[in-house]
Structures are given as C-alpha cells and as structure tokens.
Length: 471
Image 1 (cartoon, rainbow, N blue to C red):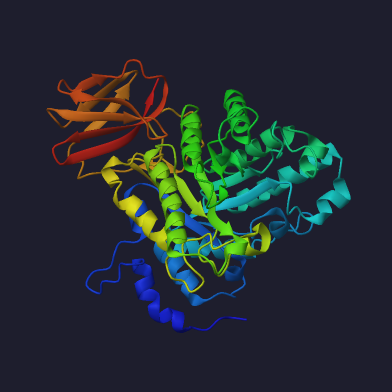
Image 2 (image 1 turned 90 degrees about the vertical axis):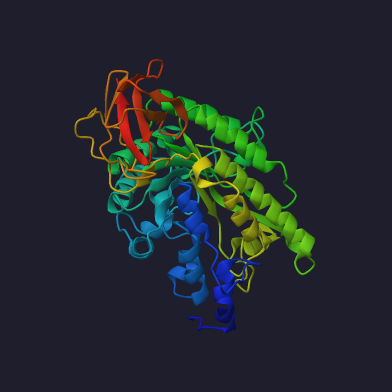
C-alpha cells in the first residue's frame, strides 16, 4: 500500500521550521544547513517502509530537507545483499545511493560482518568450517564494498561483536563467524574492506558503549582493541556508539564525551550511529509536556558533546518519526525520535536546533575541519605513501586564497603571498597541533610528529587550507 497525501501535509511547511518557529516571513535554517556549516553530518535511517514505497510522502520531504547523512535500516545487511551464495541483490541499496546522490547526502553502509541477519545458507552450509567461512566473508565484503566503491563514505565493518557480560570479551556464542573462525575474522574484515575501497572510513559499531569506561565494560574493551588494531596496522578509522537509551539514562552524554576523548588519543573518530531516547512503553498516552522537555534536554546534551568534541563527525538517529520506529515492537520503549506520529517536531528537535545555533561554526572543530568530502585527494607532489583512509579533499575557506601559497619541507612550512599570516595546523582528527604567526616567510613545525596534517594560513580576508605531509 502506498500512502496518499494526507492532512498532515498541510502542516509540512510549519513542520520544517521546527516547533515554535512558524514565522511566514523567513524560514528557520534546517538541521542539515547548520550541520554543514559546522563541518558535521547529522542524519537518520531510511526505514524499510521507504524502500518498499509504503510510507507517507511527508517522510522523504522532511528527511532530505533536514538531514545530510543516511543509512539503511536493514537493506544493506548480509541477508539482504547476499540472500543466496554468491548471488547479490543490490537493488534496494542502489535505490538509497541514488536518492543520496540526488540530494547530496552522505551514505553510511551498515553492516558487513555481524552475527545477526546472516543469510541462512551460511550456517547450513559452512558452520564450523574456518577456511570456508573466511572465503565466504571475504567474498561478501569484496563484492559489497566493491560494488559501492566511492559511493558509500563509511562502513560498519564489524557490528556488535562483543558479549553482554560484565567482563567484556568477544561474543563467543551465537556468531557463525566467531564460532567458526575466531577473533581473526574481525581483523580480516577490516583489511578486506580497506582493500575493496581504500578511501572509505571503516568503523567498529556496538551498543552499550555509552555506559562508561569502567573496568570490564564494553567501552573499555573497545578502546583496548582499537589500540591493538592501530598498533598492528589494521585500517580502522572510526568507532560507532549506537546509544539506544531511555529517558532515565542521564549520565550517558558525559560517558560518550569521555569515550570520544579516549579515541581522540588514538587518532580515531567516534560517531553516534543509532541514537534514540525512548520512554518506557507503558507510559504511552500518559506523557506530559515536562516529559517531552526532559527528552529534549537529553538530546541537547548529546548534541553539545557531539559539537564540542573535535573527533566526532556523525550524529545518526535511528528513525525520523515515532510513526515508524523499531522501539515499540522490538525494544519495549516508545516515542524516542525527533518527530511524533503526525510528523510534528517535538521539543527534541528544538533542542538540537538550539545546540547547533549556540555552537557557532567558527568554534566547531571536526574531523572534517577546513576540508569537505568530495573526490579522493590528489597527492601529486606529496608523499605517495598510501594513506587510504580518507575521502577528503582540501578546499579554500574563509575568503579567497588570492596569491597565498604554501609548501612544506621537512618540518618547515614555507608561505608566499603574505608579509604576515596566521598559521594553524590540525591533525587529521581536526585537533590543533600548532598555532602561530608567520612574519619571515616560513615557520618551523618542530615537535610535530611525522604524518599528514591540514595547514590553514590566513592573511587579511584571504585564507588557504591545504593537506601537508611532515617527514
């Protein structure tokens, strides 16, 4: 069944302005516009109903107007993309990618290696057969990532591989991959995904990471594993914290902040990938304005953390409207999203807008600071070493570059076209590693380790940002 335009659509214009912002004189900016100005991505899923053309037209209109990153609810998981051995179905995934291209929306891929929603033929044919399972997983990752090479910016390479016990360790039961292969499958999955698309961001994604970094927690376990992966050259670039919580979980935003800081030390991005903040299902129909305000306050705290931590790049909510949400059917929770069942924005929407406005673009440093996601960077004339973990290219910011130019030799940055200039250097997570003035035509970047950085030079109204390699 396809829904026809309903009376809900009459209020759509006001909906897009946000609750309390219904001025007919000038429309408020959208979440999408404010996110872009701050170098961030804020988005939500496309529900399965959208893929089946079984959703109200209001859904897509709000989705493409308000958000700039998208992920499929189910349509890019293993059972959807490879329902029979080596027989791939990309129809629905392609539909989302085309929608994203048409509306200039970033795409997340979810998920390549997961213990759940694996096609039945994998276990029935190959359970316990290590070499066969490795070949199956390798083929799946190569074919899926290869099909979407250059179109999917970021993949959840491994999803929910940690158990739920207090002393966290890898999920040893209920996973055809771990039971048949062991922990080796995780490392291999990242290597295969990177080979299939060297420019894609590669994430480990899990739930309950928001409970803090105490000993034995999932969060602390992931931090230790990321340390091992980085030490061993495994190409992981990001971690996703799903963060499915209830309204009572008031300490979780600061736990996410602490987690972001821990990963910043490792040069890894932390993304919020599946956020929803629900009420207990039994409270449906009994909720008050104060309850919705409390929900909005919690959303606001997450957005504050997201905008204030420089190694956080994506903020994805697991649903757009309470009319289409997994919470009621699968989680025993309800009304956890930004829009109610009539597509009216809730206080949670307003709270996110306020947080964005109160964090001016000039004050937000992100993993995409001074760069924008376009085609892979041209490394001609720089270090030809394969860096392969980015889809970023440097652009001029804050005015025309004019005659400004720069190049680096060793640890010396040479600047031409300005008698005096302000120089800032950021690592690839957007963190400042140097700030100073150039009055002699060059600055020494002593003390900065070898590697790739973004240098920004400003002189008057001219500004130039460029990726540099310190050797």
